[in-house]
Image 1 (tube, helix red, strand yellow):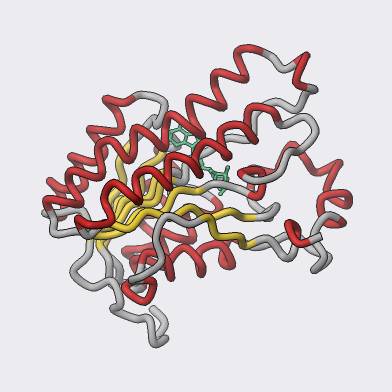
Image 2: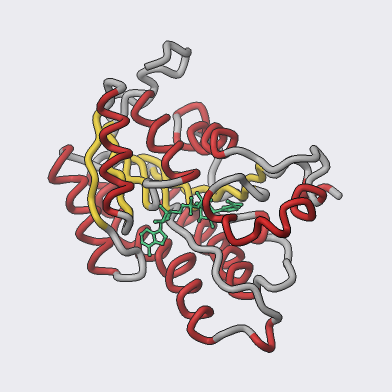
Length: 254
Ligand code: NAI
């Protein structure tokens, strides 16, 4: 455990992180636990979720794993129930699970991939909000971060489904934010540029091109996305609500 000034910032809070077994979600889960939260790592990668929890508990944090498929509303409801049953409440949620999907021009985009990406990256976020919000309200309020993308505001060749889903997550975020703002729940979207995680494993041949799209001349790291996400989840962001927050090395500025 580190002793930064954010240590124990989340003491007494319970957090649910979907897609917490890998990449950005894993780093967010780790950092939340480091800040004192009890963290549920929810993922359809059971082994990865268990390993994440082992690492967090070995570092002195509190965490539990649950298997979750965000494309299945009943599975999402069960994961939210698990968080409350295990740790007694739910204050924070990060709807982060996502897939890259196929790369193909819109007119050739495979229909099954369209459905898989929309099911995961959009419907999964809706199901998350659907079941998290009542529990957060019942716990006295809190904050949610939905993982959008730079492709939540930009198009990208070959990524029709991904870009459509990530744009839609922004609308979902804004709507939930205005609905629940007066009830003590903030909802924000985080929009990473291209981040060096396993999600990009099929894009290695494009890596130099992707790097060139970022004025800072590199891809981002999961740590850099976690930093912004933790700020938005914290009381330091008490008046930040319903917004789309870039962490993109200047990608959108050019
Ligand atoms: P990753 O592939 O390292 O992690 C994604 C996690 O989501 C994995 O643990 C995977 O098992 C889980 N997951 C996927 N489908 C699931 C499902 N149906 N149910 C439950 N869990 C599921 O990817 P990364 O990069 O950490 O992505 C996290 C989020 O950040 C995603 O929403 C992604 O779209 C978004 N993002 C990533 C960027 C990147 O360049 N890596 C850029 C912008 C946004």
